[in-house]
Length: 349
Image: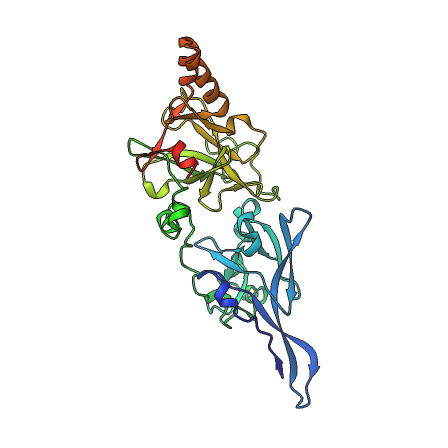
């Protein structure tokens, strides 16, 4: 007898490229007919710590945590409440507890840390054993893992499909899905065909000491949870542009949706116009204590904005007819618009 537990309506809350991992286990008992009694369990990632930045995998009879394959990377990312924390499953091989949780970067740069499927799509294990070239490799792979529909997790829908929220590929699709009210609060920065964008900072530990590609201090070990860095850059394609919105006094990057540092969203920080003439902004994790991350608009000229400190003193200098101070603060302000509207007017949309 097989005891099957179902998650009612679970497929309706999963994105197209997400799935649950379930496993049917032999309890060791038999029913009246002498058949083994099996139980169905789902892989559940239980939050750890007060801030719940990390998690530990366990098996649950009533619910599971959504996961997805990262396109072309042989990694299974933990979704649900952990979607923006950049956590992945690591296959350690113990049949009773085959998975643990690690940051998707860092140690996963090593091929042996990635997850692979054997050629018959019925077993999973470490990527280095998935080619089946050696006879002992097959013994290191484990079968019996399926999704919520009973299909092997090596053959789930979306395994080889680029996720919709991948940075640079689906920004317009993401924007088009918003309501008119939500769109009114979103904007991009554009100047002369260039766009302000963000990207994950390179993290290459493959360099060899003494050669040009060597990065001193680069490490693969357990890095702080979600400590991967993001940086600003100037893009030539609108599909790579970042979507932003005003977050009180701050300007927050809301797309790419996974742009996070230490689990916190990115906000702009005013840089130096001399060093960054096109887009004088840097990105940092949203932190209310950073003064250069608090923006304001001029009341004298609604098209001018910059740090709240410079905008305020620019207005005061104009009121005092102080040409020297007016020029000084004006040089530190910027003029930006989106779809013909000043960024300052979008702030109050």
